[in-house]
Length: 330
Image (cartoon, rainbow, N blue to C red):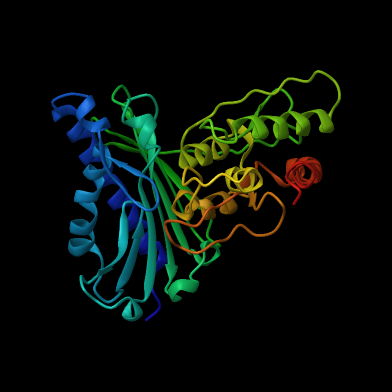
C-alpha cells in the first residue's frame, strides 16, 4: 500500500505541537532563563543548548508511540549524529522513509525569549545516502512562540497538493484558519529584502555583495529594508506571509571564497520545509541557479535564495548571479 503523505503531514504537525507544548511548559517551570541558555554539548552540526534537550526528550518517545509500524522510518536531526530508526534498532536499509527534522530552528532567538523559533520537518521516500532535499514529499513548520504570545502558527504541504495553514491559541487550544499571501511585488524597493549575515565571519563580504546588488539593480537612492531573522524557518514564514520579498543565505559560498572553516551556516535540516514555499509559488533555488538540493544529513552546507514570486525572481536573479560570480569568482 502506498504511504499516505497527507496522513504523515498530520502526524508531523502533531509532533510539532508536542514539542511546542513541551517547550512552553519547560519555560514556565525552569528555575531561571539562564538554565535554558547553557551549552549542553557540541555536535558535528552545531552547538546544542539546554533548550534543545527539551525537544530531544519528546521526539523518540513520540515516534515510538504514534508513527505507524508499517512505515518504518529513519530520523535525521540536528543534535543526533548517529542514525535513529523507528521501530528502534531496525537497520537503516530496511526503512521505507527518511524524515529530517530541526526540532528548534532559531534556538538562539527563543532561548532568550526574543523571537519565535520553528519546528521543521520533511519526509521523503528512503533512498539511502542518496536521499535529497528535492525528494521530500511532505513538509511542516510549527511556530514555537515567545512567552508573551498567545498565538502560534502552523504551515504544511504535500507535494502537488498545495499548502495548508492554521493558528493555534496556545492558551485555549482553539484552532483557526490562517490565510497566507506572499508578496506580489515585482521589485524589492520599499520592501524587505536581504542576504543573511548573522555572525561576524564573512559579514563584510556579504554586505558588499548585497550593496553591489542593489546598486546594480537601480542606481537611484531607492530604499530597501532588512530584518535579520535568525532562523531559516522564520525567514520562510516572512516570505509566506508577504512580509519579505527576497531572502538569500550564501554563507557557504562566502566562506569558501574567504577560506573560512565554520559550521555556522545553513544545513539541510534548516531548509527541509522548502517544499511549502514551492507549493505557495515562491521561487526557492540555489543562488547561482538550479534546483535547491542536497543530501538529507546534518552537516552538508546549503546556500539558497528565495524570491516571493516569478516576476521578482526574473527581475533580480540575473543581477544577483552576476554579482556573485564577479565577487566570489564562481
